[in-house]
Length: 229
Image (cartoon, rainbow, N blue to C red):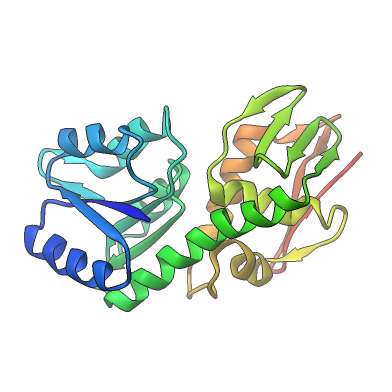
């Protein structure tokens, strides 16, 4: 898998490149926002590692530009303790985040978890294609696309997996911890709002209500329930 790192810290990029290549990834690095945007939209990379803080540019703004035309998986690198950047990054379409400093082994674990959500799931559904419907929503499991009233809704890999996890248990409460394991491939950390932010993004893209009823219901302190009317 080809990975693009967008980070102005050249020493960190060299370290991560060396480590990731030992894990059989092919890695390239860009150190400016414009260079990173061009490379990210080239279609040559299957995964992006994007630093929030770039010289003269906000990584979140760069992510917003990338998401206008690409659903490539993105892992954001954020400052430890900066919860605002993490939440905004997830809202803009990042699949997950990792606060600096971090252990490269944790980075690899996050990459592989996101990779499994996309590639392995796609392979399974491709051999057994099907569709799920819930009111105005249709999930095509073969192509991992979502339609609302026959219009395609662009979702990230994480958002699709999360929506599928909810709809396949429609009418039942799905615990946040269970969603984290299925969608993120990891346990939630203390004060980790990753699932909540992905849910918020789904609500915005799909519409909060259907037939006057809340589409995705929050069950306080437990999890979420997809409602079918």
